Every structure is written in structure tokens, then in C-alpha cells.
Length: 493
Image (cartoon, rainbow, N blue to C red; front, side, top):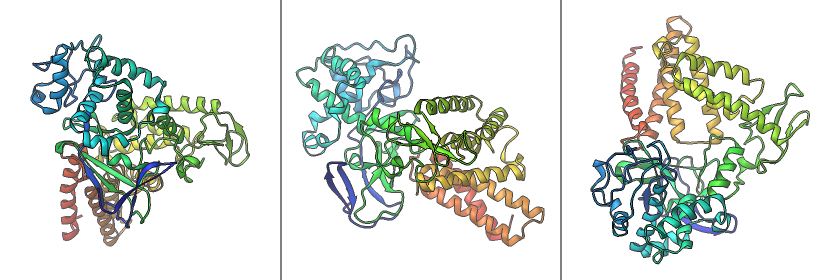
């Protein structure tokens, strides 16, 4: 761990980390390899190592006959569990029905690996792992606890013959550690996997985090945690253990059900989400009012207009938002088609009378439009009119402005928006120049701005794994950057 980081503890946060010196945005705070890597719960039929889907009649480990693709047969990560399955003649039955069904037998893999690694690393258990939060009281007798008792404890004690080695309480404790602390990552082939990082887990939670991380599949899933913003001395390090671009109700539900705590960060306790109105809806009783929750931490709390004080029940608000969300979800099946663009634009016009312009459903629709404009037949970048280019530019700036408040700093989502913005910004400038609306000095300023956007984009995304989508963006962005720099140097517009 970085020497400028100190561990401390209090009743509210438990163990957490603070910085003992000022830290600059982009600075690496700490890095570590995962203690354990494995499949997510409720996985479909997948390879136990690379997690790529496997057919019901697909390849198996030559020893234990559990699912393993040909590229992963000799991987050491499978060795310990393989011995358990072989020694106890544990048969793999596969997914019920087809490879698209959930394969419950695989739920035991990550906890089993964790337990076996603890046996071979008792010092790490004593100094790091056993201190990790697992929220036993909150988890006990919950739906997930009972599922784990049946699918994991029962399976490891029964077919796997491990009752004498690992108690039920110990297995449940490990399930809790994994559930509360795991990070999602992607394999080199792009499939989802989960990792547990003991050092990284000491960061407390905030829905406006001051750190970001990169997990490198090509380097054993090593994680690099960086400051996403400038952090002042004695400030706690925070990560977001839910989705920053979800509304408060959704974030709180995810944290309660999956992490077993209620977030009370500045964003969550503010009905307007730091003035962004990310969850606010239009009042039906007055022209200018927006309706917000009277208690964002209570899902059953009523909602009230900030202007006319009209009260709406939580159930009525939930029904309204559910209907709108279902309609917005219908866009997904038409992405990257002219129909999809038309649907997004129609819904944005329709919803401006129902939601605040910054509402998360509106933001999702805008993000979809940003992705489609420039990549859809009939709407490729070279086919967009100056009005359409300006539209995409405005969409990018709207979301970047929101990110500055809700997810600030050097983040992947910011970098991808900068990439989306650079081309329409320059192309729109070129059209304006050809129409005589701006002079060559103004065009060069726009070109310089596009170069700066790409430069920042590359700085952020080059930290991602070489196998990632972001790395492919870096390759394209770097070539474009060279072209634009040459254009600026030679006045070639």
C-alpha cells in the first residue's frame, strides 16, 4: 500500500483508508493481485477459468470432468478444486435444459477456491482476510443466506465431503466476504468474472467516489487504484460499490440487498442529488415544480413538489417511473438503427413533460443517442448535417456537465465521452468555416480543442487492459490524434 495511505477505523465506517498527503488526480494509490478469482454466482454453463460459455456437450477437464475449455486445461487456478472433485467423485451434471440456463453447481467454485487458498495462506487470513467486512448479522437468514446455505454450504459439506475441514459458519463468512467485497472484471476474451482484493476493500463507499480503478486481465487481474480527482490530506479514500449513473432509489436498493448497508453520503441524503435533479420528476399540479423524495433513504417515503408542495405517494411515483422505464427499455432492441434514433428522440421530447432534463432515464436515452449518431446506417459521421453534429456535441456536453458533479475526474465514462465529442466538434467547425461563419483562427481553436479532448481521452483509457474495448479506442484515438496534430501544424483543415 502507498506510504501516503493510512488505515483507520470508526463505528460508522468500520475500517477505512485516508491519505496522509495531498494526492493528484491520476496518481496510483495502490495496486494488488486478487486473493481469489472465479465465476459470478448464477452463472450459465461456462469454463471454470476463462468463464467463456461452453456447450452442454462441450469440453471438460480430463481429470474431474467439470467444464474447462481446451485453452485452460493446464491452468493452475483449477488444480485445488479439481483434486476435491476427483477425490470425492463429485459429478458435474451441467445446466438443466440447455447452456442458457443457470448452472447452480458453479456457485460453489469461487467460495471453494477462497477456502482452499486460506488453508494454504494462513498468514494472509490472520493479517488481512479475516478483517474484511462480511455483514454476518445483516446477511443471516436473508434470502441470499438461505440460498448459499443450500447451494454452497450444503454442496461443499455433502458431495464435496468438506464438512470436517470447513464449518458452515466459515463457509457463510467467506460467501459474505465475496458478496460484499468482490469487484467485477472481464477476462481477456471479454467474459465477466469476479475478484476479491483485500487492500482495495478498505476503501469506504461513496456515490461520488474520489478514486477509480483498472483491472488488468492480461496481468493476472491486477488492480490499479488511482485518484480520479485531486484529494486533500486526511480525506478518506472512496469507491462506489454500486452504479454511479443510477438514481438514489436504485443505488440504495442495490447496496441494501447486495452490500447490506444504507449509504448516507452527501449525494444520497440530498433529494436533488447535489442539485442535479437526477431522480426528480415534473409536478403535475404546477408548471415549474419538480417532485423529489421527502426522505431519499426511505423507499416508502412520500414525494413532494419543491414549488407547490403537492404530495405524491411513493407507490404512485414508483408506478409512474416503472412505466416510463419500461418504455425507455424498448429502445435497446433497436440500437444502431434509424428506428432506434427516432425512438430515442421521440421519448426525449415526450419525457421532458414528465421528468427533469437531468433525470437518469433521460440521461440513458441521451447516451444511447451519442453512441448511435455516427455509427448507424444513414447517420454515419460523414452523413451527419451540421445540425445533427451540433446536436451530438450538445448531448456530450450535457452529460459531461453532469459527470462533473456525480462522477468527477479521470473516469472511463468521461474518457469515452471525450472520444465521442472530438470528431463532431471538429467536423462541425469545418462546416462552419466553409460556410464563412468562422475564420481560420477560430477553426484552429476548435481543432486544438479536439486535440486536447483526444489527448485526455488517451491519458485515461491507456490505463486499461490491452484486451479491453477501451484499448481499441486508444489505438484509434492515437492515430486520429496524429492526424489532427499534423493538420494543426500544416494548417491542413
